[in-house]
Image (cartoon, rainbow, N blue to C red):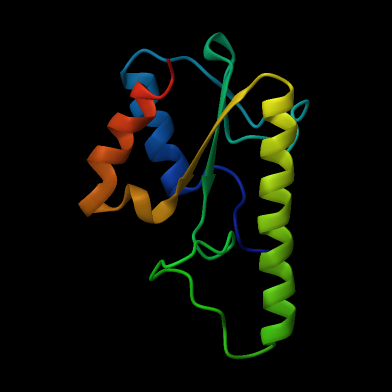
Amino acid sequence: MSQIKGKDTKPELLVRKLLFAKGYRYKLHDKKLPGTPDIVLPKYRTVIFVHGCFWHGHENCKYFVLPETRKEWWHNKISRNKDLDVENSAKLKALGWKVLTIFECELKKEKGEVTLNEITTNLY
């Protein structure tokens, strides 16, 4: 698991590239905010989390399949990630931030263009 990247993942780079091309400027991984959001748009008081479907237990997604080995351990790990996601979103909203969460499957070919357009429309 030490080889798993937490920053600069392909889905995250895709979202960043789109935002930059459309003229949005952002900060990356602001440690001062709860949950260290992947993308922070201070001008719009918006943060974007780009989640991997497996690591964040995306329900009803073909990319989230619990491994057959050590099921209890994986279940606890993914449940804890989901709990932290909810907790961090609540803290950010309490601080006056708008929170957008995007899962990697929403950036695949079928849904990708729609999701990317929704991101920019949800900033206002």
